[in-house]
Amino acid sequence: MKRQAVPIIDSHVHLYPPEVNRDPLAWAVVHDEPHWAVLCGRRRKDGAAVQGFPSVDQLLRDMDTAGIAKVVLLGWYWEKHETCVAQNKFYADCLRAHPDRLAAFATVQPKAGTPAFEEACRAMDDGLSGFGELSPHSQHFRLDDPVWRQVLALAAEWKVPVNLHVTDPASRKYAGRVETPLADFIRLAQEFPATNFILAHWGGGLAWAREAAALPNVWFDTAASPLLYGPEVWAKAPHGRVLFGSDYPLILYPKTEVAPEFNGLLKEAKAAGASASLLGGNATKLFGW
Image 1 (cartoon, rainbow, N blue to C red):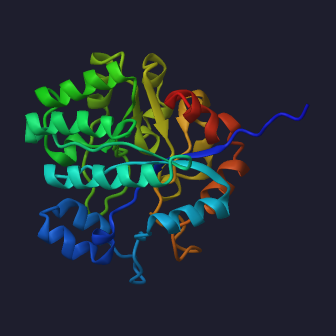
Image 2: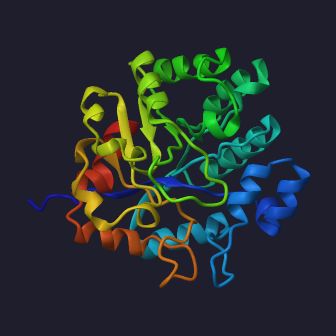
């Protein structure tokens, strides 16, 4: 009997509501999201944008073109509670329309206090299945913030993962870059051993560091890999805890791509020997699909 191929799953995708896509920078000003404005407004040397703002229909077409079975829509490390609520509701609508192709994580701003915790619970009731992409360092809340710790404890209780943005301390400088000390993520993983963490962008290099072996509740995704590392990284990390992630709609190969897509990263991963587990099996296991 022919073995069924493991579906390809992208565990790190972003999508924004239509009102954001129409004029991202103007929207960011009105909604007081300055950090996101810096990141989404970046331009290459030739003046082209570093990312696109596709609709959910365009996302699905791009998935079909690349043979992506399912993606995980990640929220953003928004600075305002109201933006988190709007993002979560948009994702809930996307899930209801395309439950077989999309999963989604909720975003929260712990600085909002009790309303942030209530939003976390509401988003889970609405069908979202994790938290992230979050960043204490970009959202300016403490690691010991009580609401943050409540969310992490509930993630363990609900058996859903938490995706965190990580910057490699050795990476180049760019507009909007925020330092994220790797020791902070090691601390969180140790203090919340029942919570599964996904550290984005290869965990800023933690994926192949000696400390990773002692953190069984930490997983890593490959988001934005070509913008950060060479193809050799695909062989450096333990594939049993690595999730394929693109950071779509970021344009990963600015010299050859003019619009967001999945094909380039998939080609690189397969050429580097990425396993079926990395491309989809690990996500299926972690998310319980």
